[in-house]
Length: 421
Image (cartoon, rainbow, N blue to C red; front, side):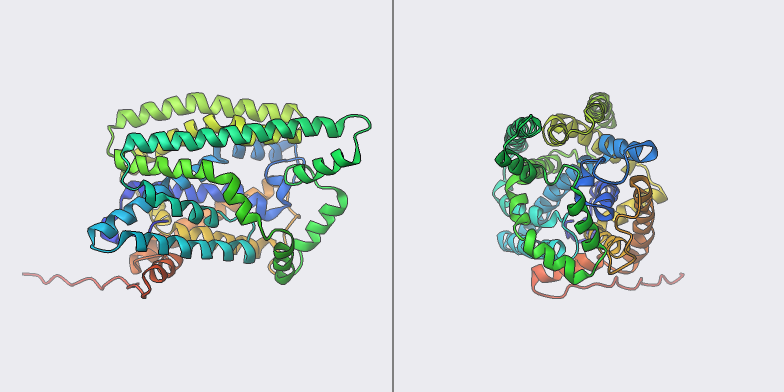
């Protein structure tokens, strides 16, 4: 989502970002289409058999977390590029950087409170404020810092998973106390199938008015962006630092030999795919136990997610090296990733919520997922023609102009005709 001069674009970063923003929607669509617990737990809503179970497994094994991780890597790389280019252009890099992050935070808060509860921009902005301190670190030190944050995340999530499993066992024991049951209800709210009355409330809420949804979010989820920043920052910041290291090392810019990317992709998929498949089987075998779901998603998947992120990045860089019409369209979608991310939220909310077509809760998981390829097609169709006429996507232009306190040139200059000799 970096805003850099067109002449300075790095094609591989744009292609990576385009794949990531499209991939993210393929898992986010579930959270738009049905109660939030269904995102993690297929028994919560949307079906657990046949095509719906297959869609859950495919998303979990192939996409969930990996595309978000790539997006985080690219945010770190893009942020470093903006800082470097501000320095090279004689600007005050700290001022440019912090203005960008504070405006991004405002975008994110508006996105969360007014459009969709699954916003990641606020988290990115909060972690992005810390990135400036790492701008001059060498690759090796960036890798050490990234490893430290990811290990911290693994430790915290592992400890939470241990507590989760213990509380689940206590709540399911005969004669569990009212206090234990109340604690379990609070702790498992986002992962367990909702009770009938809670489900009815969610369905009525999201099939209702926009104002009702906003009021409910302000009343019951006002502190969620802060809690996300507290609990999700170690992992996200670790990925961003990996992105900065990936830029400096040449990995994300396509500077490595093709054989290195192929070896990385082969190793990552050979280890990551079976690992994720085993976790998917573990969740299914447990009957989608709430504690097992938390353990799988937030702790045990961590090393496999990192392996598959590396594998996907390697494969996408190799794809970006071969000129093709598809590559150019994916790159354009990546150049307009900020607009595509927010635009997908706006369109999906109009599709599923009550102030639009009110499809919320009416589709099974596999039916809801079919919306994702339609949105991919829209991203690929509009981005390239738009960027052939304009320098930035609409939201990229707004963000860039606000961060610089001045409207930026938007239209491309008309081509100069070449006169025949």
